[in-house]
Length: 206
Ligand SMILES: Nc1nc2c(ncn2[C@@H]2O[C@H](COP(=O)(O)OP(=O)(O)OP(=O)(O)O)[C@@H](O)[C@H]2O)c(=O)[nH]1
Image (cartoon, rainbow, N blue to C red; front, side, top):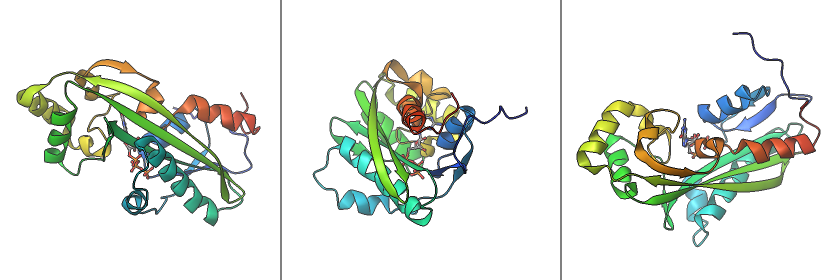
């Protein structure tokens, strides 16, 4: 299918400091010209140095670290970095390493409401100019061991690609009773406030 004409008005494509195909897809679906570069940030080291930070503040610090790392190498580009933290009553979850890790996540998340804090940092002229966080709240059904196993069979290896072991736009939708928050925030890149900020900088045609 031919690409929609780009709505990006920057002199060069938006530089996304992320390895997330989901984030890249969200921007491309919004007809932005995007280039990606791995942020090369040791997230666990940043987290270790951020003891005492709330999960929300940790997400913002990680997003800023990623945007800042890439922007320092590309001072002439508009750069965005992002990070998503799953917060279950203050406990931070990371992407599960394997099926067993995903099963352990779901056993703890089931029957409860968790928050997804999705942070974005925007860098221009080589440094982070602004950042923000949007939170979504998701209430997971009580699944039981058999329910978790059936879900993991259906979801497959993709479960290690997201912090909560689910892709909401896929079979992950079966896990939930209630969702409060914007779809793109749950996928990891809150588009409405991001587009508003880019528009405010004269970088969008609409
Ligand atoms: N497709 C999909 N991806 C999701 C969903 N929820 C969370 N994610 C992804 O889970 C990942 C969250 O981990 P992060 O550490 O923020 O990002 P990452 O994937 O490691 O990529 P970097 O930006 O390079 O750090 C992101 O790639 C999100 O896009 C979802 O419902 N669907």
